Amino acid sequence: MTPSPAVTVVGSINVDLTIRVSRLPGPGETVGAGTLTREPGGKGANQAVALQRLGASVTLVGAVGEDADGSWACANLERVGVSTAGVVRSSAAATGTAVVLVDDAGENQIVVCPGANDLVSHRGVELWTDPILAQLEVPLDTVVDLASAARGFLAINTAPAQQLPQEVIERTDLFIANAGEYQQIPGLRSARLVAVTDGARGATLLAAGVEIARATSPKVVAVSTVGAGDAFSAALVLGLVRGLSPTAALAAACAAGSDAVTDAAAQPALRHLDDYLRATYEEGSR
Image 1 (cartoon, rainbow, N blue to C red):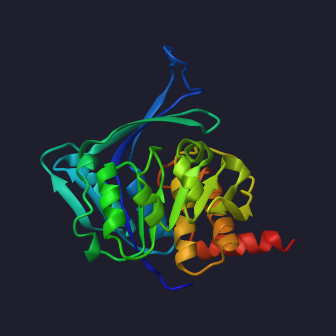
Image 2 (cartoon, rainbow, N blue to C red; image 1 turned 45 degrees about the vertical axis):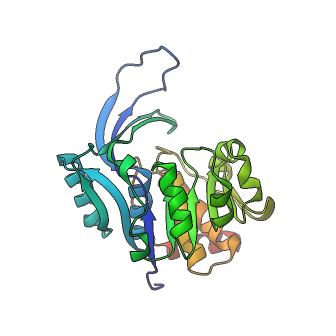
């Protein structure tokens, strides 16, 4: 297999309380007969685990509370192989928590209580390796500072969507957004490279608003879409860092994202990136 490149993830660490129901509730509605599970989550942790399973060597920069949840979350990351050398333990806030509703079709609704994630800082990021992948579940000031401090390849997943300063748009090498986020953040139209995901329909890669690659997603039976975006983000960053063409990297990322929806976990049991590359090559040669 291809040697493991080193990647740093700057982002959130949560405990996910996942409730599975037959259908998602409407405003003011109560839906019964749910089942509750407690799982590791947070977009930073999810992407770090995905990168590690895809074949990278990963360090996570983040923050948790000095509580049982923080210890549990860090132990899970270390068990997968992710380095938690950049994770701060804080007595000022509890470990972040997300409440996730998932229906029988795999669609979801998520409410996040950031807790210690609001304390994540870019400080010391120069001690970690480039490339860097970040998300917007940490303070925007941290993302702005990170864009200024990072010296190498910087990728940002624009979830949850919020307006970004122009200096962040201009500095970032790659943005990853779903179709809704791309519409909500007009500045992305001028960004140097943006991957726009569209669920089961696949994804496009845009350079300064011009499409340079497109890939479809393999057809699968969805169990949960919670981990799909993070798996896609991790695979795309790893593919581009490894020097794959935009088309090959995008196709492999779509394959990883599709694989993720067949697993109920927010941190699905992904295969090595080489396996997804082989699968897309074989599919394209038919």
